[in-house]
Image 1 (tube, rainbow, N blue to C red):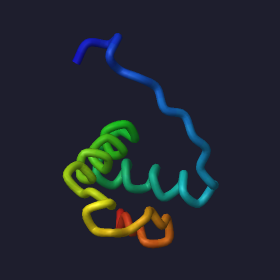
Image 2: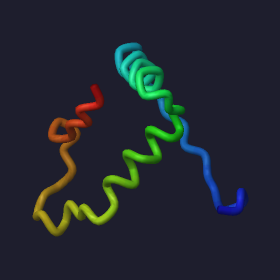
Image 3: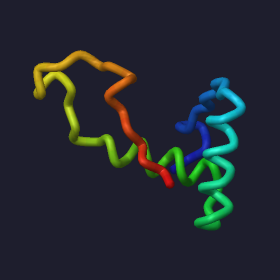
Image 4: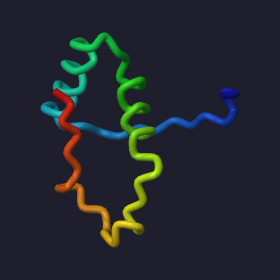
Length: 65
């Protein structure tokens, strides 16, 4: 993908969330970018509207470890 079509996303994590991400990356020898990109790609095709739901962050279970 050409760089000009890429974009940056910046967000803050709690200490616990950051540690979880870092532990996962270390365990599976993957970069944070790779892990987050894979997570987003896994969401493709899953339409919350089709399920008749509104997004509820409490329902999202990443089950990373």
